[in-house]
Image (cartoon, rainbow, N blue to C red; front, side, top):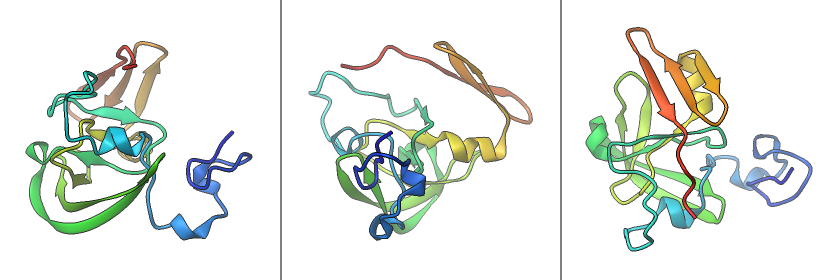
Length: 146
């Protein structure tokens, strides 16, 4: 097991002894993927309205068009290839506060944060269902981008 925080083997990022990056939540994607400003990669991870549920992420990054109550708040996060900032946060209806990012191709929710609110059902290679109070929200597995 390799730590996405310090790069050393033997422990997961949440148990990393490297305290320097302790305040930077981890994104499960490389910084290039999270902060891309172009669709020329021919591999856009999400449309602005699609959301990825990531079991390796400690950060929630969402297109501001999906958020309410947008407000200024500089936040930092650490991706697998470096750190980045967002300048605003907003509320994702039915969930929690998220970092707002206009240019991030993926909308990324931390599975751990979602599991803190709702029960989750997982069908391997098929879907993850979030069992909300008034409806179920299904995250379907998709073909990987290469």
